[in-house]
Image 1 (cartoon, rainbow, N blue to C red):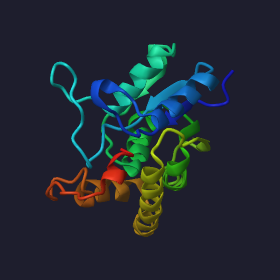
Image 2 (image 1 turned 30 degrees about the horizontal axis):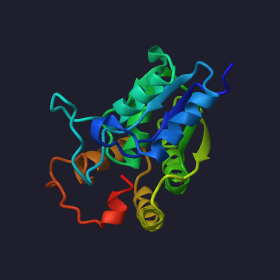
Image 3 (image 1 turned 90 degrees about the horizontal axis):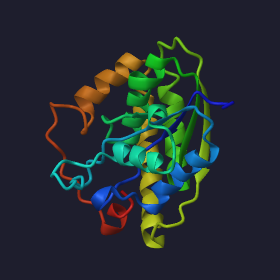
Image 4 (image 1 turned 180 degrees about the vertical axis):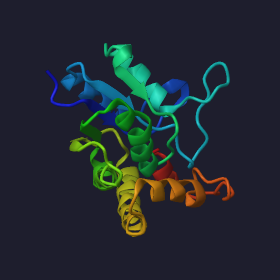
Length: 213
């Protein structure tokens, strides 16, 4: 019997043909290793940093769907996989996971699996999102890292610096938001990815950093 109601896996990029980067495969491989009939929630529509790859019909390949297909190819039952296709960043991962799947299904014991480079920010964000009132459930969050092996060394160094900077920005953001309603309002009025009052941002990032998405 599983110790968790659901395992959550943040997105980490997808390549042409729906191929997942090695560091993302490692997250899902860990799910396969420990799977005991709990639900698995794959997270993320994509990223704002670059356009999504297209499938052979010309449709965008969604990160969480590519992750779900990888799990299915490894034997995880389709009925146990839930996809979240709305988020474009880690805060969105947490918000949409909670509001679309976790609260609706009454999941309480959650395990979040992500890469080592991504874990400090992921843990901070998920603990915060799942602490915001109203909370009808008493969540129990666990976190497990997988290695960053497979990512270019220079790219990894660049990504770790970006993660550190983004965690500092997040610390300021969360100090201003105290309820789930306030988070919703901020996401849909202030956040680049979700607000219609903000023009789509034009990001300029290094090639090294882009390799990590």
